[in-house]
Image 1 (cartoon, rainbow, N blue to C red):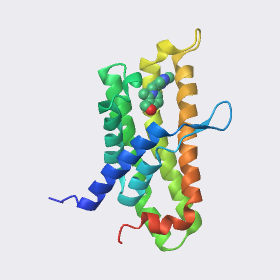
Image 2 (image 1 turned 90 degrees about the vertical axis):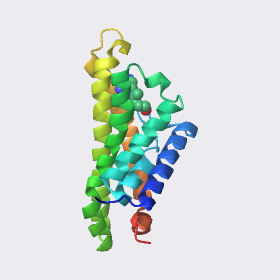
Image 3 (image 1 turned 45 degrees about the vertical axis):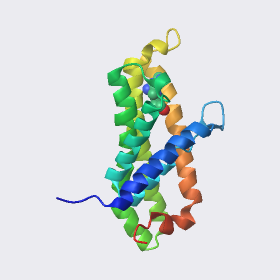
Length: 191
Ligand code: 218
């Protein structure tokens, strides 16, 4: 049996809490009529890139759980199935971004800057897309009645969720690109 070491566990708790607090205290930054940047997924991506899929998924799950137990999810919680999908499954799926960790580590060790950024971009897009695919599906099934008169639930859910998807993943990409000089130290878990 393999034992989970203490360090990633502490970081999961810390970064999930930071994501929750960022969500509470920051306003999305509007960059046009359709997209607002929102940086709150960054801590979960950091977890995924530092420790891999399992830690990222655990961090996302705890972030979702924190929103639910503190009542922050109330407005987005319609039914048990929908709430479970959108707060537990969707947020855990952000951790999929960690699949790039092995190749990312290699690229960073070899000092290949462009390659590192390509893997980070791939991880962020994959994690963000996986999460928002769930929100899109839940939007069609559970939020269709909120669509403007005459608009199909598919189009409505696509408009709402693709705009949030873009705002959140774009913001995360900007942060990681801005921090590229420090990636080696940010993602090094050895010391
Ligand atoms: C069309 C539509 N409206 C609302 C929701 C609910 N939703 C969307 C995105 C993210 C989250 C989690 C909280 O940030 C929620 C609950 C939807 N899926 N579709």
